[in-house]
Amino acid sequence: MTKKPSIQNVNINGYKTQRVIAQETIKNGATHTGSMSHPKTRDENVKILDDYLTLCEENNIRPVMFRVRNSDKYIKNFNKQLLAEFDTIVEQACQKHPSASFVDGWKWNGVTYADFYDHAHLNINGAAKFSTYLNDFIEQLDKQGG
Image (cartoon, rainbow, N blue to C red; front, side, top):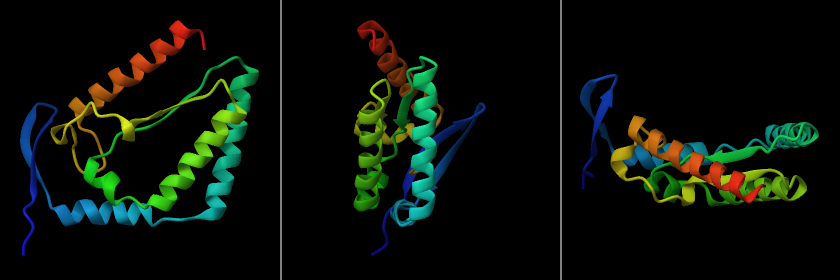
C-alpha cells in the first residue's frame, strides 16, 4: 500500500510553491537524526554548556535555552532514549545554574502542520509564531524578575 504524501504550500521570498513530503521521509528523517549517538561529543558539549552557563552567571546574564518545535510526526518518531538523555542534561544544567531557563518547543502546541517547511523545520510563518512564543516567555521572566 502506497502512503499518501503530505502536500504543503510554501511561500519563499514571495514565490508560492508546494512541497511534497512523503510520510516515509518524515519517519526516516527523525529515525536517522535520533539514531546519532556520539557519547564523546555529548560529553564535550555538556562541558561547553556548563562553561557557557558559568560565564553567563559571572556576567549577570540570564541564558534562555530552547528546543525549536518540530512536526508531531517527527517528534513521534524521534529516539525516545536520546530525547530522555537530552532532557536530563538540560534539567541538570538548569539545576546547577538557576539563572538559566529552558523553553521546550516540542511541548508547545501553537503551530499546525502548515507552519512547517518540512518535517523538521518551521517555515517563515511557523518561525514567526515560535519567535512570538519565545518572546512572550522572556517577557514573563522579566516581569517575574528572574
